[in-house]
Image (cartoon, rainbow, N blue to C red):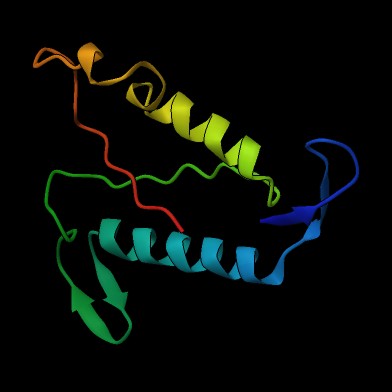
Length: 99
């Protein structure tokens, strides 16, 4: 959401494109989770997937590839440790969509 700034992982001014992506995702998720009312002129009587609430977490790397990779390995430890850490017993209920 920010442009690169000073220093190794410094953040600069907000990125217009980044803010637009964030606001579009926020709007879409709110529309999918909405249980009643109207979305884009269409009457809504239940959420897109009843019983499922979609969330949003934003990690701002400020355009730094190294910081983006750090965030990715925190979200997906297998990227760091390898597939030998996989298990059928682990919770796989989270999904990720990225830009």
